[in-house]
Every structure is written in C-alpha cells, then in structure tokens.
Length: 415
Image (cartoon, rainbow, N blue to C red; front, top):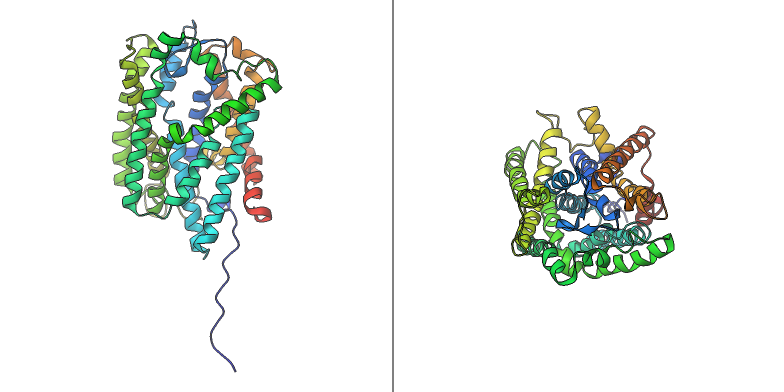
C-alpha cells in the first residue's frame, strides 16, 4: 500500500539568532544605553559620603553638581527603562523566531522560561560577586511574568502596562523620601543601610554584604520592580509590529514618540536637576513629587531615545530597512555601537568588574576619595574600552564571553 502523504517537517532545533540576522536598531540602542548605565551606576561604588537627592553622594567638588544634574537629566531613571523596553522587545522576537521555525508553544515557553531562569542565575553571580544593584536578576524574574503575557491580547497588555506604569510612579515618589528619612534617621542613615558592600574592607566581607543586599533586592522586586513591566510590555507590543525592524513603515509614530518624549523627559527631570545644582531647594514635601515626575518622564524618555535611534539608523528610502537579514548598518559609527549591543551582557558585567577594581577598598580604593565627576570620567572611559573590545571581537566574528556562556547554558551545544 502506498500513499502520497508526506511526513510533516520536523521543527528546526532551538538555537540562538545568528549575529548577521539580528535586527540592528535594538543592538545599536543597547550599545548606546550602556553608557547611560555606566554613569548612572558608578556613584554607587563611592562610599563614606552623605547621600542626597536620588541617593547621589554629596561632595565639595565644584564639578559634581553639574555632573549629577546632567546624569539625572539624561540617564537616571531613563537608561534602565530603555533597556527594559529592549528586553521585552527581544523576548517577543525570540518567540516570533521560534514560531517561524515551527516550534510548538509548550516548547517555546520552556525555552523562554529557561532563558529567564538562567538570567536570574547570572544576576545572582553578578549581584553577589560584583554589584549589589544588579538588574539582570530583576529582568529575569520579571521575564518569567512576561511569559504569561507574551501571547496576551493587546487590550490585556495595555491594562497591565498602565497599571505597572502607575506603580513605577509610586516607586519614584518613594525614592524622593530621602529628606524625610534624613529628618528621622540622620542624613547618613540611608548610606549605612544601603551601601555596606561598597565600603567593605575585604572582598569576602563585600561578598557577604552583597549577598544580603542582592537577596533583599530580589525579594523586593514584587514591590519595587514591577514598574519596569511598563516599558517591557511596551517593548513586547512594539515587537509585534516590528517597529524597530521596520522604522520606515512606522516613521510617523517614531517621530511622534521621539519629538514629544525627549522634551517631556528633559522637562520632567528639570526640578531634580535644578535642585542638584543648588538653584532651587526642594522641601521634604516637594521632593517626593519631583522624584515621581522624574521617574514617570524617565520611562517616557527611554522610549523616546529608542525611537530616535531607530529613526537615525533606519535608513531614508526603500531597501534601507534594518530588519532584513542582509541589511547592514549605514556607517562605521552604527557598526561600532551595534557590535557592543550584540555583546551588551559582557559590556554590562565588565563595567562592574572595572568599578570594583578601581573603587573598592580591596582594589585601588578610589571610592573613598574620588569625586562624582572623576568617577563619571572613569565610567565613560570604561564604556569606551568595552566599545573597542566589542569591535575587536566583531572583527574576528566572536561573541562576548558572557553571551557565549548564556547561550551555551540555554541552548546547549547549539548555542
């Protein structure tokens, strides 16, 4: 007995996307935002200082207020929401790719869960060994929640997104309570409570302190980290329409987001920036509202930055779309940033490693004496170094070490 029926094709084995097939605007944005993350994180490696607005160290250095104001305007509460948006975008891209390969939902879901679980593991290593303010574990934990929403309707995503955005605003207001805390517990109380690991005299003592700090941070994610779901969900929604992969098709929306979002972000940061400069003084009542405005407009600014990057690198005419596998960045600068964006995990971890070596008491010990301006210069230099290293790796077609390890953990030998 014969039959003309053909056996159903087997789905392609799960494997990560080749670098040549990646959408470029998200990678370029990741490479650029690592600079914002570096300058936003580096003050947390300074110790023995009184903390002021946005828990920034208070020093007598002339340049520090200007640096603090600039970073507060452009990076604080803006870089991590931007990265969160790209995280949601990338997670949806991963699912779309697996669906195109014929992967059934249960298998794709296991892949998503496995990837986020490993991200939590990487975050634990980073948080305990290098930096208590690790964000990888938070993203991995929230990523597990995103798996429940990744196939939800647009209406459901909108409801959850707006609720989490409201939560982000509330958390922003809580960040502005430093004035009230100083009145009740003294100005140095927040420093003593939050940054024990930064000033630990030995590495084992620092690891022990960071273990407690990172664990407490992870436990608090359902209370303080849910606000990051808002930009993640926005990224998921944008990925469904391939907004960053087809910027010409969505040019009008991107222009609107960038044109409105960037001024809103800057204006929303103005009260905090002026207070950091000493131009105005925020009362203990006004400070939470200024911090709330800073956080809310920061999430808007993160989306606006991504929109602007997509517009700049997205091409000007037919055939220049960056979503096709054969498309390339238009110039050497785009290629530079994309190389780092494709190795953003390694770049992020390298920042913390350098900061520990330079600032910790058991390293060069500059955390006790460096001004915020000096520390920010070191952060910029570190970012530039990771940019150079990423491009060297790109020239020899090698992934970053952290990317290689994560892919190997998630996909096995196919990684």
